[in-house]
Image 1: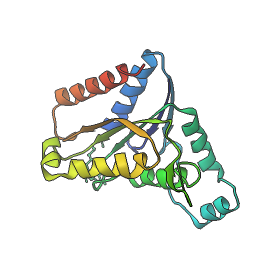
Image 2: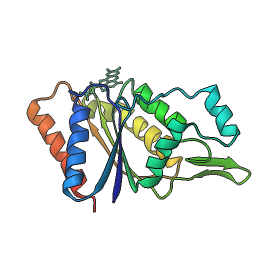
Image 3: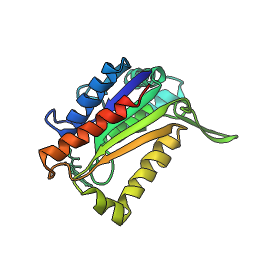
Image 4: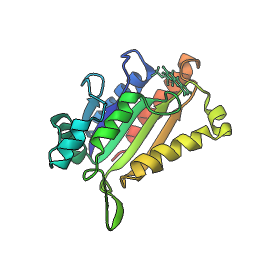
Length: 193
Ligand SMILES: Cc1cc2nc3c(=O)[nH]c(=O)nc-3n(C[C@H](O)[C@H](O)[C@H](O)COP(=O)(O)O)c2cc1C
């Protein structure tokens, strides 16, 4: 299968970086075809601009958006890896969605109503957060985040979310706990056929 990994974290020493490296290696060991889009390495511009709207209206797609859309077209499975910041996505990740998941590419809204256009794509999400998992589950925050990402964004585009893994309390748990989390990342990769 063709796997596109969209990764967003500025720190190469972060746990998200370890998740990305572990997932990519495990997929490659399974013989999967893997491409990585590291949004900080790419210096991806996350700001949806007036010039983008003007280009779309003229039937043009700005070059940096077109490049990312090509990557998405190529993939069977798309995996997003990012930390939870202020109960949502890092701004750069959100801006990637604002610009790349554009009308006419990811969804269409016309007289027939609203349709997602990425129905052939499967989706996996890896999220990390500082809050312990049980605290977010009890408060309902976990459900809210799941609903926004799974239904509000990816489901809206017709994508099938086949996995959404949260790792809680990442900065404060022991190294052993973090190693177990990475084992879970490997296990998820090993299920890909
Ligand atoms: C700007 C910023 C906002 C954050 N907001 C949240 C938050 O809303 N909820 C939470 O549980 N943790 C929050 N955190 C903690 C991070 O999610 C946590 O440190 C990260 O997931 C750990 O993984 P990393 O080592 O890859 O950064 C925030 C961290 C930063 C830097």
